[in-house]
Image 1 (cartoon, rainbow, N blue to C red):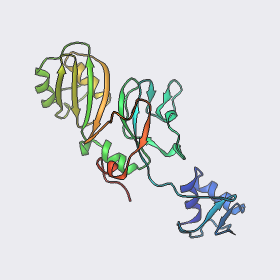
Image 2: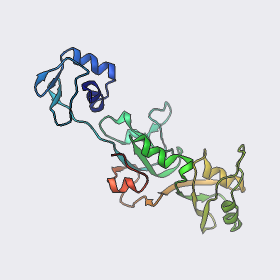
Image 3: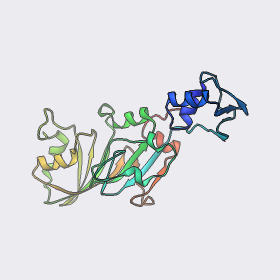
Image 4: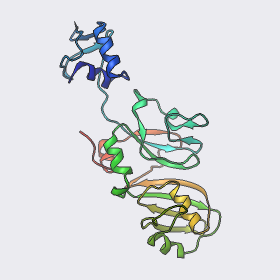
Length: 234
């Protein structure tokens, strides 16, 4: 690949910034000064910026147990973002796979692989997401059929796709949806005259949030784990 692209992949510099530092004589290839941004390089060469060896960081896949009170964005003037809970190089390249509301807890995926993220979050792939909801009022068993048939949400033109409801107790349910409309779980219960008091995402696809991952912490997924959600870029 080109030298300037290699530097961009190893740092948070833009292509123009990379080209500038190369022309300034701050980059060496195998200990030899190089001032041409278009120079072709390979990953087995020793490329250094101001004497520090550079290494490409590959695509990354993380799972977080999101706590309440954090937003799923890179910057927010009023609330902490989930990225303040992370400490990773080139963190600005990471994004969440979909979002959880400020007060919603549970399983959150984070990556810098846009294709992987799209395969999980795109409605056409119908990736299942299971939530545990605690409700203000007891829910009737008739809601199981209503959610399976699809309900009309306020302001929508089409009913929700079939969803599976399991009643744990009258005011606690597990709901599995296959799309990701705005505030969907809360709006589905509102459509049948109930209110979600607390919401926690437990599962995406076949992957469940483990008890070992305490609230507010995260870990990197193995490639095998990442592949259970979608195709992992090579």
